Every structure is written in C-alpha cells, then in structure tokens.
Image 1 (cartoon, protein in one colour):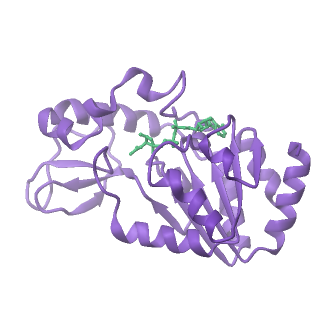
Image 2 (image 1 turned 90 degrees about the vertical axis):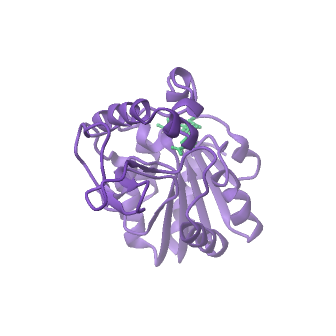
Image 3 (image 1 turned 135 degrees about the vertical axis):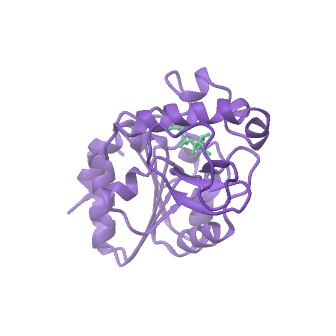
Length: 242
Ligand code: OAD
C-alpha cells in the first residue's frame, strides 16, 4: 500500500476509534534535533551504554555518569516539541480512550501537552535520591556534580531506567491495560530492539488491535504490523488528523 492510501485507511479508522494507544521512540524526537540511540548518528555509536547507563557504571564512576547526563540535559534544554508531538496532542483530544507510551526520557511529549503518558524509561528532568528514594523534577542546567538530595543529602541519580533495571510496576500495568484494550496501536520511531517495548506490538496484535508502524526504516515490528508507513514522524503524524 502506498503512503497516501495507508494514510487514508488509517484516518478513516481513527475517525471511528474509541481507544487508541501509541508507542513512541527516539525517532519522534529526532525531528526536534534530539539524537537517536542507534544508527550511524546514534548516541550508542560514540558511547558505550554499559559505561554510562547502568547501575554498575554509576557505582563505579558517578561523576562520569552525571557529566554525560549534564551534557544531554544541556542539549535537550535547547529542543522543542515538533509537529509530530503536537499531532499526538490533538489526537489525544479527539479519542475517548488514549494512552501514550514513550521510551523517550526527554519530556517533549509532556511539554507539547500530552496528558495520558507512561514514560517507561523515566525522565531526564527528574532526579531520584539513592538513599531516601524521593523523586523530584529538576530542570537546572548544568546540575552541580555530584548533586545531593535536599531532604537527606544522599547522592542523587537521574530518574532513568538503566540497562539491567526493571521498569516501574504501575507503569507497566498501565501500559498492558492500554495495549490489551486498544482498537488501534501506533508504533512510532522506535527500532523495536529494547524490551519490553519491543513486544508491545505483539501484545496488542494478539488482542485484535489494528497495528501500524511509522518509521524511516523497516524494523522487527514491520513483520507483524497491519500497515507500515515510511516517513518522518513530523511529516506523517499531522496528516492523520481530520
Ligand atoms: P533507536 O535509536 O534505537 O531507534 C530510533 C528509530 O527511529 C529507528 O528505527 C529510526 O529508523 C527511527 N527514526 C529516526 N528518525 C525518524 C523520524 N524522523 N521519523 C520516524 N522514525 C524515525 O531508539 P529507540 O527505539 O527509542 O533507553 O531506543 C529504545 C531505547 O534504547 C531508548 O529508550 C534508550 C535506548 O537505550 C533508555 O534511555 C533507557
């Protein structure tokens, strides 16, 4: 199916759908100038995840890890939501039951105005105390290294789910509820390689959802979806709106 026909089909379905779930990855923020993780320009080409984004790395060298997150916070502080994020805000307003599951930690969906969101990998603008566990929003750029908890003086860490860590249980329950009940699932701008998000398409498909992928390139999800649309999120998503 060509892109025009695929969009026409999807627009018609969205016009009648009562429940829609969306899964996003770094590709939607790429259109705001945020680097993705994989691919020739991706962050993991120059940095090794296990040296920067794991609990072991933080125990070994918290200064190095915070320097990397400060660099990313400085970069992200200059970025704004794009028409792809904005189209999802408009879609949320037009659908009775809408849930947005994002792997992105940049907070751009919330800044754009999305409301029903699970940020399953955390949020780079939040910090968590390694001693008392308190979670706070902190938009200071750069953060002093090493940052300390205002309540107990414990060492703060980024509120991010690192490699080898579990996702928040309540977040996961919300995600599965949204995946198991949606009529349409849109999977946008993710390489589909990181679990559990990589399995979300199959979960919705098994419950009878119409599953659509929007990406620049084929991914493992392309095998199971009902429609693949190739293109940039910022160009395609506004075309889904009535
Ligand atoms: P990846 O970097 O793995 O994949 C980005 C995907 O977006 C690729 O499939 C690209 O083809 C696609 N893409 C790029 N630009 C696009 C555009 N303008 N429009 C549409 N698609 C585009 O990013 P994720 O799949 O999000 O974990 O990565 C998953 C997780 O791996 C991340 O959340 C991160 C990382 O390690 C944490 O931060 C914990």
